[in-house]
Length: 324
Image 1 (tube, rainbow, N blue to C red):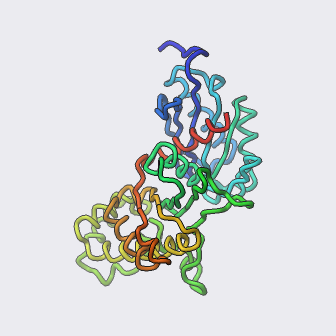
Image 2: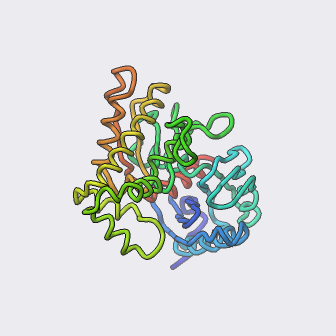
Image 3: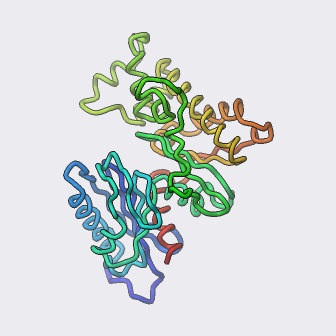
């Protein structure tokens, strides 16, 4: 393929950096992905290895888009941590093993192009606000349910991070004060990790549940969102009980945020939401309506991600473009 010329519209890169996988996309001004690369993060091998793999993956994505990394107008990256946005520092990413890592400056040194770093759910929320289901919707709360639970806020047409850069972290809201460790927060009860844990805990009371067979056939690691989806869709009593209880608690937590912020739109995303879809979102909405104040907020729109697993890449790219 011929290399793109400097007179063509500028391209930006969006990177969704997770503890297990990283996704990289080269994005044009219309929000179309024109080059991609997915790699394993290999966080256990250390920060330098992750950065090497990130740059290598970016180079591969650029090759697919017929450019060099130096041709990019900017690079945006979402990382699973609170981020000092002003300085591009990853404050504490547990699943990467990073503390106070100056990711923006480290990538700037390697790439030589402007770099913007933000929280992973923040960039996903920005993706939905600019290119997805939240476009034209105004203010909203984004809640992403996957391995953990994260959140982001769009207020007055912009991401609201708060003075300490941690606004929207609904996963760390306390649901059960005084509960045992691992049984206190929204994330402890509503993440995929906690859903599987709860299913394993009470599975003995459901001897006929197909969960037992599915779990036995799983060679290693926890059940994924697709397995939970299949069991839920089949009407498995154990799965439906746990998922519905989790959705009710998540709806309660969201209702509290809406009551405080007076928001009428919620955007849901993440692996669990993508797998379980609208029935799961409907359960969450039922709980929101039951608990939100005042009654006018019962008209809340609960929307499911449109961009799905591309939300982080596209949001990071759009965030990078807005700083160009």
